[in-house]
Each structure stands twice: as C-alpha cells, then as structure tokens.
Image (tube, rainbow over all chains, first blue to last red; front, side):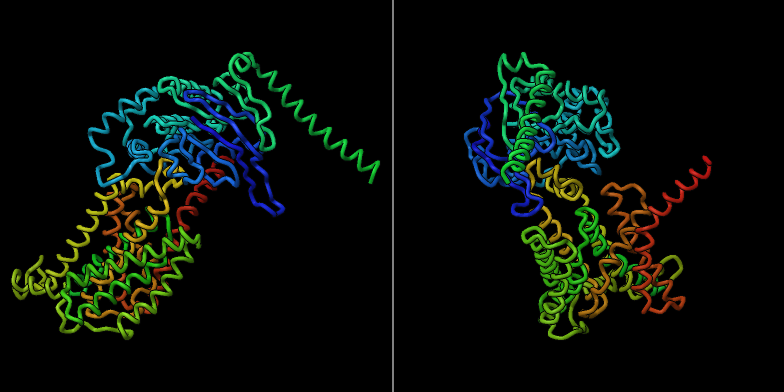
Length: 270
Length: 310
C-alpha cells in the first residue's frame, strides 16, 4: 500500500540551523496494516509523517501510495488519498465555521468543489447520522461554531472528517498528545473503532510507549532520522513498555559511548 | 434632504467597496492594498469606455473585470512569488497608478454628456416618479430617488450573490482557506488557487464600486482611490458591531448598513463644519480606535476583576 524508498530530508541546509531530519528511511506497509511510529523528540517521526502527507518535498527518494508515485504531488493533491489528524486539536477544523460546514468540507476531500450547496437538508441528515456515532451529543449542534467546542470534541470531529471518505491511508500525528488523559483515552477508543470499521491502513506517530505497545500490528522505532527497530507480528504483540524503555536506554548509552570515546581519543591523540 | 439622499446613494455605492474589503480582509484575512488602486481602476476603465461611446452596462462590467485581474495579480505575487501580503498589494496599487493614468490619458475624466448608468436611472426616475415626489413630507426630485433606489438594489443584489456564493461548496472552501489553511489543504483544496480567486472576486467588486461611483459623481479621478481600504475596513467594523454575531449573512447585511451609516455620519460632520481635509485622518483614527478598543476593554475588565478580588 504505502512504500517509502530511501527518503532524505535536511531542513535549513548549509546553515547553523541545519537539521538532518530524515536520513535514508525505507519501509513498506501492507494494505489494512496499522503501524505505530515511536521516537523521541527530534527523531524524525513527525517529519516522516509530513513527508508522506506532502507538507514538503523530500530531497531524495521516492514515496509510492497504492503503486502510484506521489513523490512530486503537492499536499492538496495527495489529500485525495490521505486522511489526516494533527497533533494540535485546533489544526484539523475551521473554528469560525459550523460543525455541518466542516463536515461538508470533509465530505468532498480531494473532490471537485462546485456551486452546489455545501449544507442541504439531505446532507444534514447524513451528517447527523454519522456524528451520532461519536456519542458526544454533537448531533443536535450541527449549526454551532466549532471554535466553541473542547479540544477533545474537535479532535474526535477531525478523526471523523479524516475518515469520512474512506482514505487509502490515515495519518495520525500524535493526535492525543495535547489532550488530557481521560479525553485522550476516549479519542484512542474512537480511533480504534473507526480504523476497525473501515479497515483503514494507518500510520500513527506517537511518543507514548504505552500507546505504541497497545495499538497497531507493527511498531517502528526511529532515532536521528533513521529506523532503528521494526517489530511486527508476534514480536510486536509480546512487546511491553518496559522493553521499549530498555531499548531507548540502550540507544542513549550507545550515543554516550560515541561521545566519550571521541573525547578520550582526542585527548590521547590530538 | 438632498444631502441625505446623496449620502445614502454614495453609501450604497461604497458598500460594494466594503463588501469587497469584507471578502479580502475578513474572509481571507488579507489586508489587500490593491483596493486603493482598483477603485480608481474601475472608475478609469468605465469612464474612458463611456467617453468612447461604449454602452454603460458593458463599460461597468468591463471595469469590474479589470479589478478582477488586478486582484488576481496581487494574489499571484503573494502565492507564486511568496511576496508578503501587504507588499504584494502595495506593488500592484503603485503600478495601477500609472496604469490608471494611461487608461484615462489625464488625471481627471469628466462624464458630462455621456450616457451612464446613473443617467439611465435618472431617466427612469423622471418617467416613473415625475419631476418630484413627496417622501414623508419632503419633496425629492424623481431622478435622485431613482438613483438611490437603484444603488440600493445593486448593493443588496451583490450582497445576496455573495451570501449565496459563500454557502456553496466552492464558497465554503474559500472561507475555510481564510479560516484554517492547513486544515483545508489536508482536505484537498489548493489554497493558493482559492486566494487568487478570492482576491480577484474582492477587487472585481471594488472596481464595480469605483465604476458606479464615477458614473454617479460624473467624473473619474486618479486620486479617488486614496485611503479606500481603510474606509472599507471602517465600514466593515461599524457593520460588525451593528449586527454583533459574525455569521456570513449578518456580516454582509451589517457591512452594507455600516457603509451607509458611516457615509451619513461623514455627511453630517461635514455639514457641521468639519474640514474635509481631516476626513482621512479621522477615518484612520477611527479604525485605529476600533482595532485596539476590544483588547483595551478586556484588559480593563481583568483589572477590575483583580481589584475586586484584592
């Protein structure tokens, strides 16, 4: 389904702010799989997701979706196949527009938009029916402005909107990181429900080890712009948060050794 | 009474300008300096077509089309070449000054004997209302009454079309572009294209306003666009505070009312002896006050609450 071939991305190249965010990432995702990407801040996990979404063009490498090369397509062109939920609950919805209007926008993701009414009595019924599945009591507030809703409600709506037309690929970018634990739990449940129902191929970025362990059928760990571990199948199912913690510790210690040995060597030889 | 009718007419004609500013400034969140140039552009194109014998309706529509192109140019400078929003508008506005002079051939084109949309309305008025009409005890020339009704109908018509347009799929996508570009890109909308179409629409309406203003006043002048963006923003702010709620339909209605009200206030102030030279200074000061007042008031309220706690 999704195939990433050796992609590289450097931000602010040749300046003091240079960041080598992706350094040769390669992996394939099968249709219907749910991959969690775990990593520390600056590991390149969000950059990976944004590269797939098309927020920027990669410096090198190819991205294929459903066999089609989408590397050169812009963000809005890729949106035809990709549904997306952001880390910030306020990014996924238009605050000054009504719930119904936001849903109307989502119901035409990647399609041509003409001069038909965005919200009609016919579409309003459909909106009501699907929003009822969220169990948030929003079905009677379709005309309300979204900006007045809580972060959790907005994130749930974004989730619904991203999956309104079944996308080939669903991208979740730490979509519960900004929510309180209780709301986060609810949004996660909803996420599982929606993915289950439509058998969505999902790529989720997270920095919560618990989430990475509990969700998905595959776990990828990233560090410094590279994939360092890739667990799937039984291996993934047996994985516990403590194992991941140990792995992170190991990575950190390896890096420290690099530093200290370099210092030691320089003291001896230079 | 003549002053009142005149103020109403200009208020309605300029409410088109305010509607254009509503599209660029509120819907797209874009402080579009092109406005100052496209008012004049509309007037210049309409005036020079009229003195060359083109019929008024065609001339007015071509003028709106010219504004459309001016707006699209500004948006392309911004989206394609990544020039800052204000600066791209200023560049086009500055360029338009020369363009307008070329179109008119001189700095002022009087429309004395040419058939204009205003003279159409006046003819219609004498036929329909006669020489003079009695309106609530005042004697009003039929021509003036027809012109004010006509400008009212155009303002309401354009407002209606905008209102309906912003409820279509395309219109909602445009509003979302101004409200949350990241979100609407993720839903597959080319935001750059939306900005180009939106600014083109806004400046088309602004140029229409300029074309009508020239025909009503009987001249086009290269200076007439000066400060028009600020004027439009002032009307918009008055309108928004008149209606309170910020839904599309109400804001559009409010914008038309705000424009008329502002024009009336200005007419009254001038009548009372305000120096016309101070008009732009006062308009700018008014917009400044309207922009900072909400922040000041809420800070004051917080202070009061703190004082109440202490």
